Length: 266
Image (cartoon, rainbow, N blue to C red; front, side, top):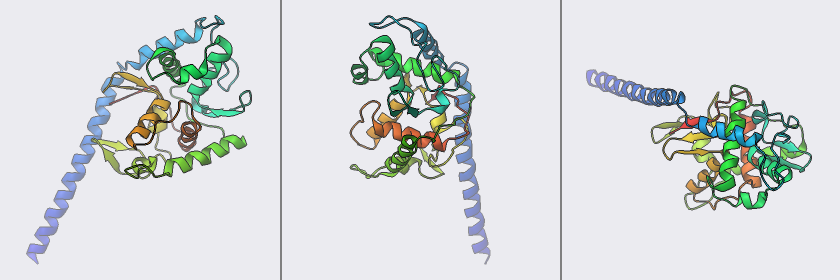
């Protein structure tokens, strides 16, 4: 009897230690990110993006100050937390980056298809990323409220949900493999459950973000692209329906979450 009690006590103590270690690790990472926030290099991308928004550029020598991001021509604040959304002028559901390409082509005369084929961080794609950082930053602190009033917005949510749970590839992975339930971790960090609202500044509410590990600013398109890589799927085309649908699914699920984008990541 005494031996059984002793065994049980040791087991409980071990579980308590493991729980404390897990908590301290998560807290340590949170503290690390908090320390980096004051000097988040994403601020440099934001400054560049604001300049690009106001600067006359492209074959038409025009600024983007008349670009409609969903709240009317030139209105930036609040637009980010309502994207992706349906746009009547393109008859498509667009995210921030694909909408920027539309504006850059129609207003400034750039070739959107050519930009979409450019590698992340290069040429005009780097400018799209900077613009996305600034636009996101203008809405920092606001809460996500993606519209679901148009049939195409509703359809995109359903497509995104299916894509999120679709398993394939050599490892039989899906987005849900990592982000489909609570309590999962990888490389000492928690993996949020994106099938429901993960909370303020988590998951969809944190991107674009500056990646400390590689010194790059990643937009949501870039983040999703890398997720496909980790699943060993072929890379999706920039601004493809599947990436926008996934963003709609995660964005709608994040309703009410406070945006901290552009955030800072490991």
